[in-house]
Length: 395
Image (cartoon, rainbow, N blue to C red; front, side, top):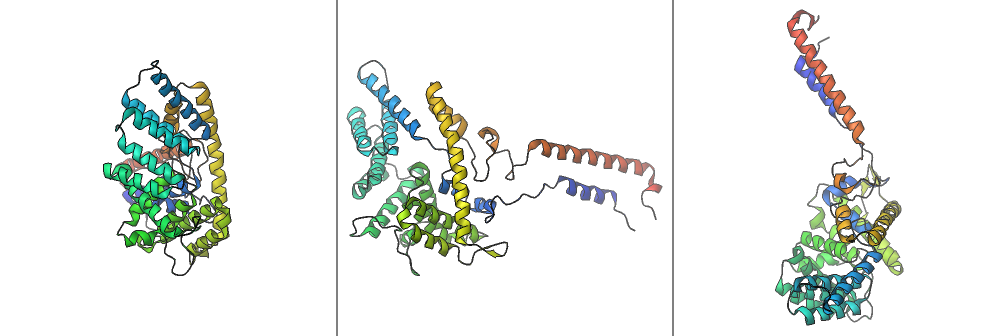
């Protein structure tokens, strides 16, 4: 039998020793790694597994920012105009996060009275967003227009998409007393948010980036935002850009189901949209059913809830013990790379060094050292055979 030449033998053994073990799918019905390759972070936004604060943290921020401004007004604490403007913005946003929108708007009025036009863009952007959250859409659009006139490229253009989404919502609302859910009626010729953007020559990629930004910095549970995201993920002009359009449709189905979770009165309609997204979709040759995706989504929400309880514990401790809870949050979660399916609880500063299948580094190190020692032995054998060539080839 012909035997391997020395270099061929080394290459073959190296390939066998240094190939990592195959990783298993994270969930029964999805290949989440494919979804992340095409749409990094989108699943995490849908279920809320991204750095965000608890209500207790916002209460603490209201207390500390309000106290600082009061002390300055009494002459007991020096604050620059820039610091006061930032404190007013922090206070207004925290109040909005807790649903105290009238107080948030009053805070912005106090900011203008105190520091004038300083931070004019932030004032307009915050006021517009708070008004929109309060359902005062036309007033909010006026403030967003003012913010865009001051700084059209702020927040990577997110406010331009916010403006378009509000215009889309008003178009769908028409003369109805309440905003419909879903916004676009279900049917074979359904015209969702993607079609609305296309008609205005807006990039759907920019649209998705803007909607995801609103979810990250606004309310990720908003049915309107989740529906808009699902529409953008369903658009052929988006999915055709990627090798596996199924990844986009699987995420779209999750976005619609999550919208139904937030708007239970419209859950059946959103379930129908999810089923439409999954038509003709397969994984490993098997049709994907809405029930399977819904069950996976519930597991993903449960995992997120468990993770957020750790955030709650951290923030409660920092509020009680730390002089600067904001800095503690940034240190631990500011650079965190959070993934659905990863429940290891590893520190955020080393998380990006771990592989997607969460292998442990001692095992990886042992495999690597063993491979290197074996290669060293092979090279030693080659050197010895070169000194005794008659014993290498055989017959």
